[in-house]
Length: 243
Image (cartoon, rainbow, N blue to C red; front, side):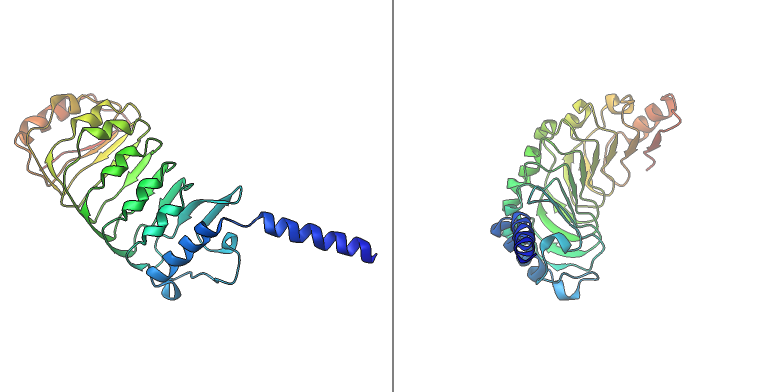
């Protein structure tokens, strides 16, 4: 019996060790906790427990593959060490009070499918490294303070389905490259400082089901609205371009 118990204990100890994530990833999570006022989160972490028990942390094959701490009262800036979570498939931190520029280290998150950071206080230029997230399907950066333009490299996001930068401080002309993204279903660039002319081909892009362009400074607003009005309506289409 004693031998059996020893073998059983050894098995569970080995299983526990096997479930350990890399130290760099654990340290990155702990630094995020301290940088964003972890003790005051609505659902906080017990740092003495295993990360697999921490709210919002998804672990697959001993690597952190998902992080969702949305609506959880995070305050502060994201630490550079967040880039050590290079196996993340989703990073969702919406409806918090996060601020500052996004860390440059997020350029390491090449596996991201979902980046959802809306309704915070992030600022700085729209990060160029986002264009290298070639697996990205959902980009939600609405209601922050990002500046800069959306340039042609957005074409690299060939799997993108949702592009939402509503309510920021972005400028420049409408990013024409968006029209070449075959999987794109939703475009929301409302409440920014975009200028120039809207392309007529945008009104004819039937694959885009949700199009929200309001509160910008486009030159051909009324003409574009007429083109939209002529578009055959589809039951699942929601087109909003009133000014």
